[in-house]
Image 1 (cartoon, rainbow, N blue to C red):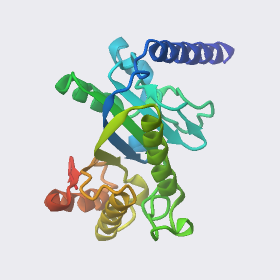
Image 2: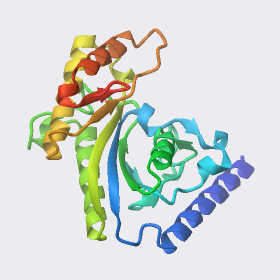
Image 3: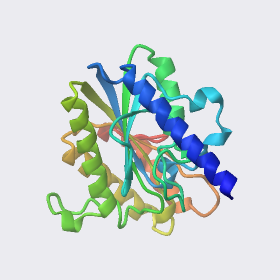
Length: 250
């Protein structure tokens, strides 16, 4: 047990050292224009992939993509080079970097290869075990008491992240939102889940003053127990006039 704890401390120290070196070399210190993407959802988005299963290249901090992560009470220390570890798995109590990662690693890899001359900024606000019914409920506009805690946290996370970018002299274009969630609403009817998802999409666009924000919705794994959620996502394919997208898209 002691050896395992010592190994984790060494990994954490090494990770932070790599990030510090990247920052000191001017990777994000110079003013730049960023393609900004928002990442939100529950454990599917927060990430439960194990970093130890990645290749050395996949574990290396990016020089092209940066992350601003919040999962209160844990958070990244401002903007950091993207790497595995921006995730809080169950029973993890030591903050980031953690031993897990989310879909941002694969997404960044694809974006960097397809647009090698651009820089990317990801704002990620996610928390496992949360639902649209309660935690992500957008409630009434300008009435925080009517809103779910995680929804309020997410909007605050986006504002904190974008403010930090502009404060440091950077510019950005908000390109889209990636949403991945579902298990906590698996007992809801497809109609109810779909209605809540559409309401959430509309309120995020309204609160961020981005009425045409594209939203891509990841599908939950089909294990025979999430049929209502998967059914709720299918109509998203027919809402392209609202830019509600998915592996499915709003």
